[in-house]
Length: 336
Ligand SMILES: [Zn+2]
Ligand SMILES: [Zn+2]
Image 1 (tube, rainbow, N blue to C red):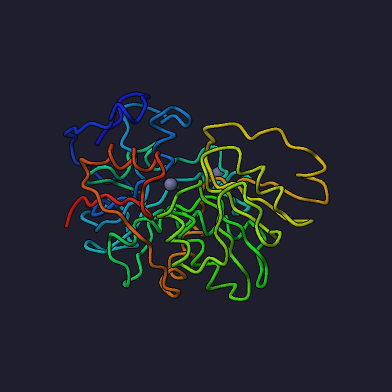
Image 2 (cartoon, rainbow, N blue to C red; image 1 turned 60 degrees about the vertical axis):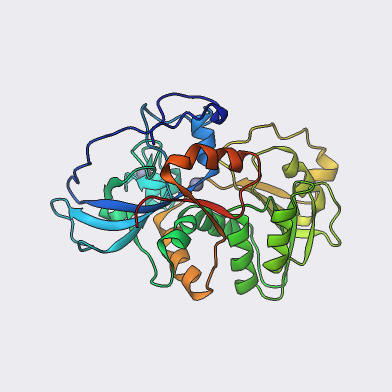
């Protein structure tokens, strides 16, 4: 399913196209794709907030599949192995960011489904250094959302400064937040998690309750206690200000979004920032995030809620996601 130009998703711009099967180059693996998750970043790419570096582009960066071919020099995996591919597709390895373990900030990095063909397809190729073994206990369907919603959620949780006993606020309760709450409850059992959704998002609120949220309200509601840290997963600006008002002194809000569709409203210094409150964004992921998170997800174990679609239904899946009506994480089933 190929994107040929920037468009609104309501125009259903992803089209079926027959392309040649890719050939793995030096140190690359050829992956026959089984499932691919649907992420909000694809909406940003389609609608022009984050443009693919060229057209046509195959989007999708939560890829699970089996290796069907090895390029010259590839030796980390064998044919038939199950692997995952995430948003980070390649990084230079020698810039100041890469050398500090911040390859997510590498200027030359390439992103799956933005700079190189991604997972809304039957096959893809990737460097063996940017593929991850998938723990046994996950099916292909349940593993897909772990690769972006999970890995970046894990990074955001780490950056939030959370610790056991603290109160965490989650703004928006979609694919990433419903995984993050499971990690938070497991790693920080004495803390509390407060969940804020759009008003009337009953399905998201029910899921939050099922996963152990200690309080659930709408963005804008005053929580029963102030927050030590918060993660904003929403695509809009207003929750950032709301989260800052609900923070304790010295608290931090982490924004887990590649773009916002509406601006962050003006902040009042005294109410929103004074007392050493912080705002930080989370950008992309590193391979280390994926290598740490996937085994942790199996140990917990994380149970992602997934809504299944066929590859041809990806436009419809993205419309549901845009409208806030996706239940858990959307996943395309591409092959058995
Ligand atoms: Zn993503
Ligand atoms: Zn670099």
